[in-house]
Length: 362
Image (tube, rainbow, N blue to C red; front, side, top):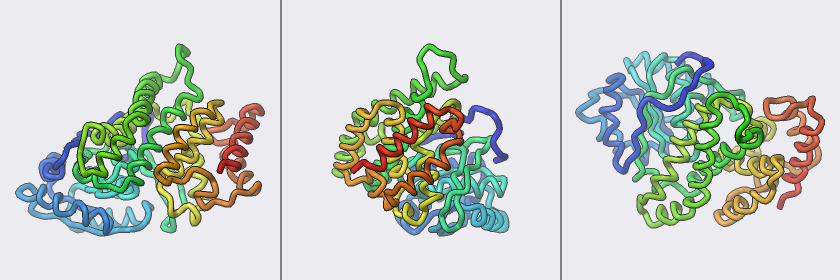
């Protein structure tokens, strides 16, 4: 998986979503290799290990399973890459949430091997997107690595994901909602846009509508232990559709304050924010994005959903100091980034006002 080129990486090689999809692990491995190096953490392997091994039976006579509970960092990825090669493995398989998905892609990059991702939650589109968000071993953000090739396959067993905690589902929902709000800030219907962005905008608009109208029904079905159309639709939207939107948009002409708020929270206050999921922090940043977009009224339905299900919805609820000093730290790091033009006084002032709004939110 060589480093990112200026290309449209629109999907994964194969995306499979259905109840019982773990039974297809073996045939998917056989498309690209024969000996998988399987990486998961204690919780995700407890949930998916039996189904994966049953799926591999008859297709793969040899495999290696390792357990890892840390961050997605270059150091560990290089160790696993060397271990996979030494064991004779020829395909990397990640099992778990966003960190494990990103780590599996990073290991595959260092090992120059194909990668198959098996998400056990829909908390992000990491299983699908051809990039890895990387951290130090301690958990501080260090940047994103983009890949020129797409993930070879994603296997989504909705019977497994229907049992995920509601918190994980909502993290994915808010991460996906952010795509629409971040794109539309600079997007103008009818104006010339970078190629691909028109399609990303249309898809993101539809995804936003799906998630705002079907998430509660999805949660209710999950709590009953059912895999309904709402469950399938919301999971598909948070993993596959959001991944496609990201690949088509390529980050072009986006303000992306919600994700900048996440990145800088992990950098500036990584100890305080450690307990929170990617999408939970993005969700708080989404409130900032709507304010910056001049649409604070769009925050009301988001805040309603956050409060109903006990999500963080303010700076203090993330454990981040709600002080003028912390506000200035965010302002200093985000102004001059791809999100805010530091030479545009009006944009900077609007951003500062948005930070004050977020810092006063309770």
